[in-house]
Amino acid sequence: MFRKAVLAGDLNFISLADSFQILGGNNSTGILRITSQYVPTPGLIYFVDGNPVNAANGSLQGMDAIYSLFGWTEGGFEFHEEEVQVEHVITSSRMEIVLDALRMFDDGVIKKVGPLSCDEIADVVGSGFKYGKGEAMPVIKGPLVDYMYVIDEEEFRDGEMIVAEGGHGNWVWVILEGKAKITRETSNGPMTIARLGEGCFIGSLASFLQRDYVRNATVTAMGDIQLGVLDTQRLYQEYASLSFDFRSLLSSLDGRLTKITDTAADLFVKRDTTDRLIKDEKPIIEEGTQKGDMFTIRGGEAYVARQTPNGYLPLLTLKEGDVFGYVPFMDVGHEPHRASVVASNDLDVGTLDAESLQREYVQLSGTFRSLVVNVCTSVALTTRMVCYCQEN
Image 1 (cartoon, rainbow, N blue to C red):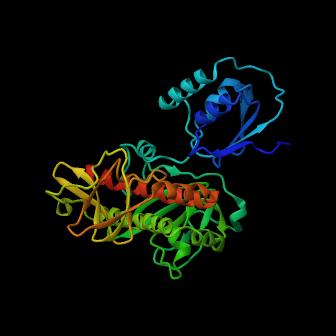
Image 2: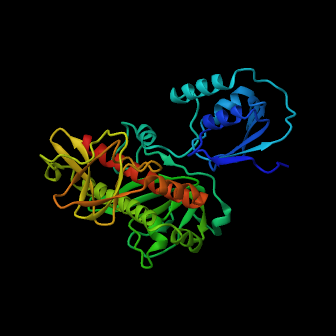
Image 3: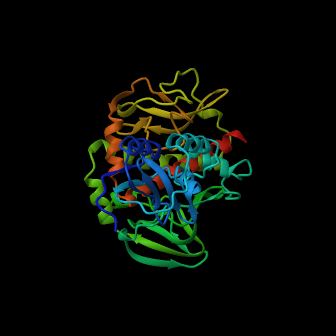
């Protein structure tokens, strides 16, 4: 049994490379235990006098195990001081290991373990994507399920409708086994939005926040599927405990998913987008910017837009109460990296404390955080659909 941890943290704040430096600087002896919601078993690294001497990650041992653990982009760690009785198989220096691992991760040699980034989604979709038809569309998978939040289980057969567009309901499910297809009805027929696999959620944040929530898409089983019904009361209580600014951020995020889906449906019906262009306007956030501030809208409007040779093509419109800018712990495939923000003449904004909001994000339960990641991934994938349509 492990003793009480003398060092613990979240990999979002203290990376594995940083923990190596801390343990090395203190000449620590013991076991570093790393956990991830995307992996069923923890990884272990054994230290003697501040240097790693062995490691285990699933079937991997020694140096291979250490390198693989640098791919865990989300998770937690604990260091327990105790006598280490394992074979010393690692002879490389601590700094040499860190530098080699970071280089290998950047080169793609070390596999990333965590949610899909927007760029990865784009890579998976690729040029073979058939807009709105579901062909070549990837099956998105989520993290491991926390059964503490599952209060019941339901099964649906192949082709059976789970959710009907336009229907009412506050249930949120997590896919335990199988796959589901998300579609939106249009005048040109059904448009496929996404295909979801194990660990993904059916239902958005608004599902349990709005009493008379109206479903805006149809969900159909792709083969037999087993779903876990989530404890929405517990999720709502966690939401209610958050600060006003963080709740505003979540509401704005959920709104982006609805709006970008509406844009995708519009383009599915009408491919010509020239009448949407914003011309001769200077953006307040330029596409490709690396960092910046986070803002909340107090008045006026802002347009999240993709740059084209003929002007800015709006993806969606943000209004009072919405949040935009650089959110370091959320990636939805929009500003600042992959979209611009163009302001109306009467836009009035306030600045948000990104560090404070990030601390709240890290403190979320694994299930709530996974639900947020699910929404981010859905926004990114739907945005990719919109961009593909614009480019082809």
